[in-house]
Image (cartoon, rainbow, N blue to C red):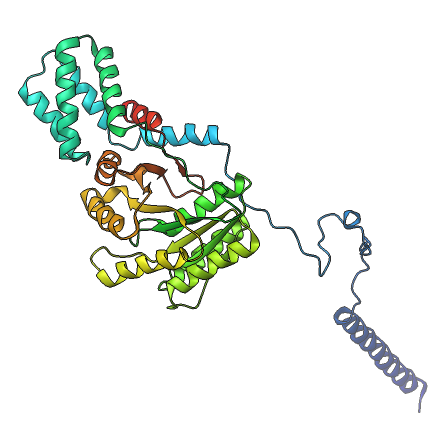
Length: 378
């Protein structure tokens, strides 16, 4: 082999060697890219200790966090807010009455129009006739300005609502036995929600409460009550869907007696007033409860938007379970504020609570003066 050929062969071998080295380096770099170890953390993870404050924001495994329970806002601020809502919810009933009474001349057409306004607001025929008669007499005798007319109207409306009725809930202590409150009403009136809201207020008053889910024909009612129980820290006694409501009510009261609670709230099925069998069953629930302790309150939940139909419901329920108080819901969405007067006259029992919305704080004691002022300010 000549020198030239030797040099060519040596150059080829050198090129092959370089190529092999480069290939190995590339394959090694690729493997490193896929299998790179994770970057080392720059912050150390704190070691769990028995001192929870040592690890802010961390709940140790197995530790149970204390649930945050609902509590109503202060009564004063709640009533101010509810009055403002009520004032704007009556579609100008008070303004309409004042406009009529402030006319320079009150002729028969004006008085008929005033009667129609009251009847449309579901005040009822009897109370409307009484109110118009008293207004006619007083304004004819006393006369006066528009401000005087407003004062007269306020006084007469307040008398019609009857501020002398006892509107307190009868849930005070009595010989160690719980005060049993039976809550009744038709489906859709807001009955189960009202039970939860009442429990919320009672707990805020430092009363121990237990709820009985005796609306066993509607699974959603039991679930809804259980949700309220979790929110306010109240135990709920329930049974299987479709079980005997009276047995659930009996067990709830028995449990309340054993545990020494202050109040047992019993939610019942939404009875239709035209279902005689269901109404009889509601009477049975009350009788079974009273084998242990008396029922202290029977609260009838009525939807204010049902108007005169609510009076039919009220009449039938009162015949079965002796209603002691009325919870009037959905008053914020109705121009039918007169139902307060009509239902009290029908049953001879007071409206004790009113619902003015869907919020947890939207159930409040019924205060006649606040109600009338809200009507006139609306």
